[in-house]
Length: 505
Length: 95
Image (cartoon, rainbow over all chains, first blue to last red; front, side):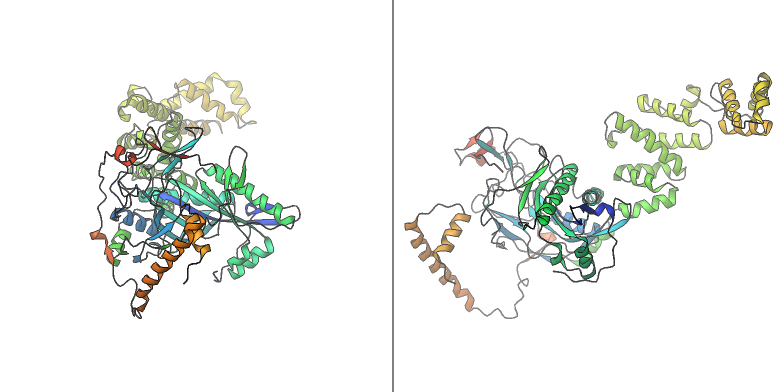
């Protein structure tokens, strides 16, 4: 139980679930299991490669052979520390591994090496946005390191489950939030933000399909008055009984599961029934959660310090060096991009969604024009990648090409339509934008006297329309269009506009 | 701490070890003898000794993140009869 003065918080609409009589507040805490990006496992030299032949990356340590001793992978420690620093968390200079004992076919050791008592990372913070677009901080309780289990496959045989130990012993970071997430939307935002930070740090690839990011979701519901009291006192005991939905690896299903689970609990509460604290599974085909077969004593893990491993001692200077070397993270990059490149917050958020795209943007926008760069990147390049189902690292265009194209647009040498054509050409067959302007006949005519001549011609050819302009100023646009047509689409629309306006108004 | 019959049965259940009633009494006796023996450690004076004071390891002493190719799938599966292709097989786990 924690008692801390908390600042007054308004409950937002998205944080409420309707009951038959009263409204309830969602109370959600997440335990995210993030596979550490490393070449070898936490305690063995076996490869962490995904999708290898079954049982081909298994050392005798991973297989739980008697007499084998685990040896800590220093890089996994570094990755956990880096992740902790990325969420502004306390780093514990002394930490320790414990054994969590349970029996399961995918756990050959009979215990998981984890960190219950002295985790490597302590309290931290992640900032997210609520559905109402307000910023909010979610507290992190801790991050600890542990071994992943093997993989059980249930659909290869009617009577047996298949076990592959390749995943056994890969390092996981379990990132435990405080129960400060208050809607299914926030739960998804939280995971996305955490994933983004870890991708920037290159500590976890965040690939949910491959299972490198999974979450256990703790859900309870709380009446508004009680929740207000919780906000005032910080007394977690007020929050009511929670249920844990295990092993979710899809953002969509996490949202659905929380929605179902909250409504199930409200029904029980309103019927005056007790909510049992239990572990449940979400079944997406039925969109409901159901209890795991009640396993008596399942939670008696008989934790104790792992006698095979020494305590981990980190030096302050080593931690500080990692902190100094952290890359710029999204929370700093977004305001800087908005400020330095004069782009909208929305564009900034789209651009920083991957570190590679943020770096690319910065390279093309520095000393050119941020708005044009953002436009080109989001509308043309991302649009094209999307259409062809390519990832950003398959982008065929180069920084030089994009900078040149931006320069041409900046100097009004091509229209935005012309720029699109040049982009398409670069995309399909490469080339140098400056050469392409003329090769494709896209150079915008900026010769004022030439444009003026065309404007005069159009005016001369359309006396009836000229008469109408005075009563209907909207016709100006029609004249601009006619001149544009006469120029074969090549005249600079800004200059046409200016001259037409001068002559007709 | 005296280990009673109930504790013996509980530990057996948690470890998935089948023991019958006849065995449990002997096991209980053995476990209590072991506990009694280990109790000897309680006689050591550890007042003021920080549990973190010894047995520390730091980054430089740990393993580097390099991969060892084991090429040992057959060895890994050698001790079981329950296998299919290169997988271990176990009675169907239904959740």
